[in-house]
Amino acid sequence: MTLRELREKRASIVAEMRALNDNPEGEAGDLSEPQSKRFDILKGELQLVEKSEERQRLVDEADRRADGRQITGDADADFDRECRSFSLTRAIAGAAGLDVDDGREREVGAELKRRAKGAFKGVAVPMAVFEKRVITTGAPVAGPGANIIATDFRGDQFIDILRNQLVTQKLGATVLSGLVGNVDIPRLKASAATGWVAENDAITPSDQQYDKVSMTPKHVGCITEFSRNMLMQSTPDIEQLIRSDFAQVLAQALDAAALVGGGSNEPDGILATSGVDTSVSFATPSWDAVLDLINIVDEANAMGTGFAMRPLAATTLRKTPKVDSTDSVMVMESPDSLAGYPVARTTQVPITSGTPDTTAVIFAHWPDLLIGYFGALDILVNPYESTAYSKGNVSVRGMLTADIQLRHVESFAAADDFPAE
Image (cartoon, rainbow, N blue to C red):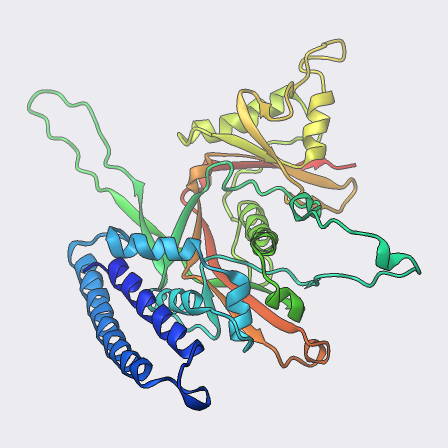
């Protein structure tokens, strides 16, 4: 039997055992004799299925290691399906000790921990993330007529906060997921040289040169607080709201690090990486400067694929004539393209204080930006944190481990003096 079939059989057995246990027909609330016999039979079947499931899991894993396959096959398709059904609120509620059915979440977490071979302090979650704020289910209503006024809760019309736009993956950054240990990616630094020779002359030998790009785990995290009602009254709408909200928070931190980085404990992003060409000046924004920036990447044989810039930079370029003050054609004629390349606008590109304040315009072959995820997201639930405990809430910490590297610094060019005033 496949792992999926074994899991379905186990679920069926557990469901029947629960039905017997919840509906005792014997004296003093105990199981009747036929019920007890049936329960014992089911208990034996459950033990056999669990043993078969463990054996099948070991065989599937050995099979993957033997032929070098990645996560494929029936077993892993089942696991991916379970991950998609993972409930973040049930996982947190279960870890907080609330009476919820979090069997799937515990099994998925255990499998993620096993695959990552890492030290998790809490629940391993398939890339859900956290924001530092309290989410509650309601607020007091005042006024003498409040009890006769109906309220329609329109979760489908939820108003999100205004967020920074994420651009690196949109522009085509390469994402490496499921990393475990430190990662070294070999890189060809220089090819063998060619040369024309006369008849009977020897070809001058030359060697290829290699180096590597290394990725090591770096950590970003945050702490959030949930109300008890939020965890106990979980609905699909609430689950989707939490997933969407949390996914943005750490993704923004990672996106900002990919564009800039270099801060304390941060990976080095594009603007912080030594060797990225910043020779083109945009102190006076112009069409010539745009073409010069493109030329740097193309001359390095990287062939750029798009721009990243702040909205104010895009606005300035849309107001700047292409040739001279009398030209009615602007440098940037569309909000989403420049010189035939896509433009991603985001406030994740920072403003640097100075005289004047400046920002950056980045042009790159974006697939050469590597974003690596190490394992799963680690969440640790603490129902006893002093402030949360006094309110009946639960404090949750989320940690995401990732790194950022550039395949070739020549694939990136930036003008870091674009006026931001």
